[in-house]
Length: 78
Image (cartoon, rainbow, N blue to C red; front, side, top):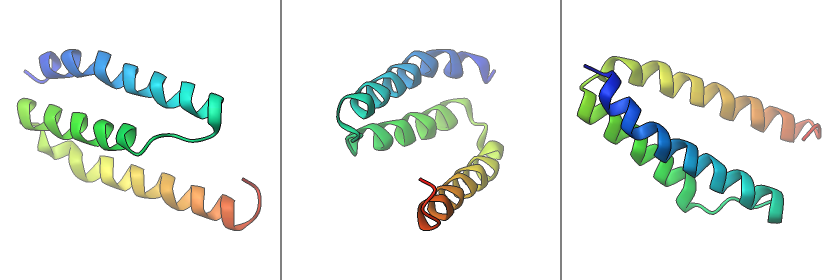
């Protein structure tokens, strides 16, 4: 039964993404509270659903995105 917690977390996730996008467009800054809230929403969804098997893949994807961002910034592309 992992669909129910995901359905409840989806509006929270989308709201936080909208706040981050609006803030980024307005001032090129995303408040630190937004990514923290996104991470906590993700962890709460995992805890409620009990589907901890997706955590390693999610961490790997996040690490790859972070590394790609660092590489782009170091290369002056971004």
